[in-house]
Length: 94
Image (cartoon, rainbow, N blue to C red; front, side):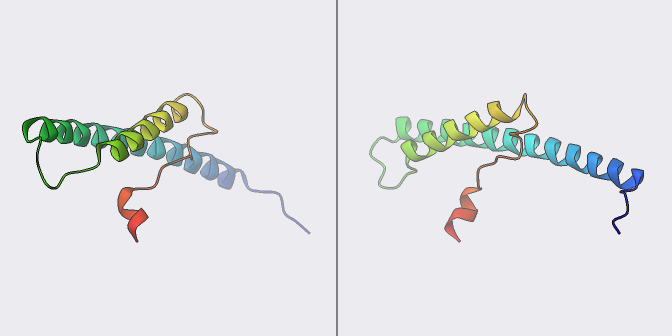
C-alpha cells in the first residue's frame, strides 16, 4: 500500500526545486559574463597583435557566447527551461 507523501517532504521538494532554478540562473549569468570578458580580451589581443601565431578561435567562442546568451535569455522568464544548460568547455575535452 502506497502512503501519501508527507507535507514536509513536499515543502522540501519545492524548496529544492527553487534552489536549483536559482543556482542554474546564476550559473548561466556567470557563464555569459565570463565569456563576454574572454571575448573582449581576445578581440583586443587580435587588434593589438594581428600576426600572432597562437590565439583563440574567435568564431568558435562567438558561437558559444551566442548560445550562452540565448540560454540566459531563455531561462530568465520561465521555470520550465531553466534546467537547460550548456556544458563547460573543460567538460567537453574529457
